[in-house]
Image (spheres, rainbow, N blue to C red):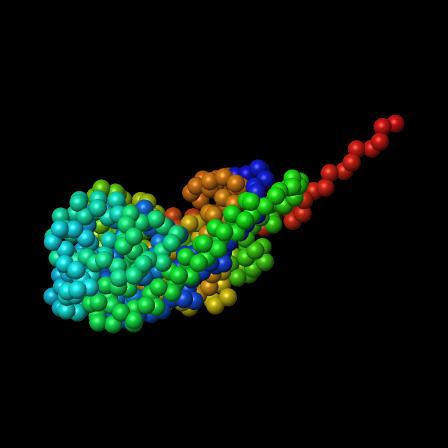
Length: 409
């Protein structure tokens, strides 16, 4: 692992909001509203839309407590779609244009319903509908937007097309008979759009401004780390999650990755939390080998509720939570977990520090001395994260100034 070369461009470190998964500087959480619905909303998101910084499906999911968000492309026989289509008190309807689709604004079905929405580009959505016969068989509704879209940062094929969150605003208003009650859905989207446009205009103005060549300042490696790592060591908490995950292409893959081992470590005090949860879905056969946990330990694990209670007792309001990438955090959030403080992606910090792709933690920390801090693979990765932090804390704080050569003679 190299931490001294090459020198990256001017440092730009951004802490991420764990809730909206946007940089804190453009976090839209202050504009989020909680809107209760009689209907269920099931959002089926194409994998390429997951983590899209200007996507609106995650935003809508945060606003609508009766919503669920699922990522994938194969939905036939999926548990999420089977559950959505089997609620007799809230019959399913599918929001997607096409032959036979009824105008939901003119002929809204009586509430409550289970509203199924596909999130993705139009090309992705067409592919998902074409390859999922069960999804295509759900009664179909469509609409023509009664007002122009404010989603000005992404080009749509037609002017009447709107973003996912705008579509939900119009459709839920029609189904539940009160369009104005759902208008607050647009506030976080408007805030995001305005922030993106402002950033674009600033970049254009900066590019057009006359430039003078100046020597690039030498920035010590330590100063290229996020300020939270430099100034809040006592508040840092390292997180690692391990999963019950079936291989791609297997029918059981429809369950997605479920968290079965959640570990946390506070480097300043040495406190460590390790909690194993019993799988809620069928256990993939190689999971004991991959996770390093005995089969009997996994099957005897606790419940999700017990894990959340243990973590809530471990975490503190001033903690800064750190992990290698977002995968573990997303599984934790899928369990209903929330972080009481800010989140830092150490993989991103490593990339910014070295100006190279960081890869897996095992690759990045190869050669560092580390100690396993908890059972299994999650405990080994926790130890690697702690070793990386120790290495970063030992980096020089200042740039070495070369000593001029003595004059000849």
